[in-house]
Amino acid sequence: MSAFNIRLEVMKQLESKIDSLIDQFLIPVEKIWQPTDFLPNSQKDTFFDEVTEIRELAKELPYDFWVVLVGDTITEEALPT
Image 1 (cartoon, rainbow, N blue to C red):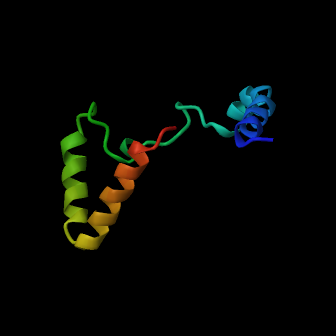
Image 2 (image 1 turned 90 degrees about the vertical axis):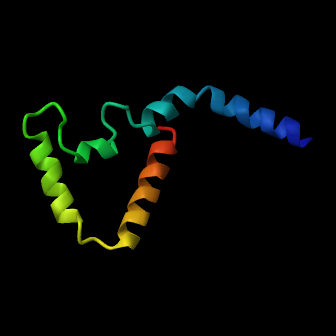
């Protein structure tokens, strides 16, 4: 049996189960967290005060922390959900 035929057989086996697999393993967009969930709400009157507070708290964090945070955020944003 060729590699193509084996792959085709696997795809045929999965085809009948794909909807249930999606429901089982794919998190709905409404429920999955986003990096912006941890930032102040820009629609609130207190937005600028909250951003100022975060900046003040964050100014002492080391450079390595920021490198990792930016890298992780880019990775999370670039992955398909």
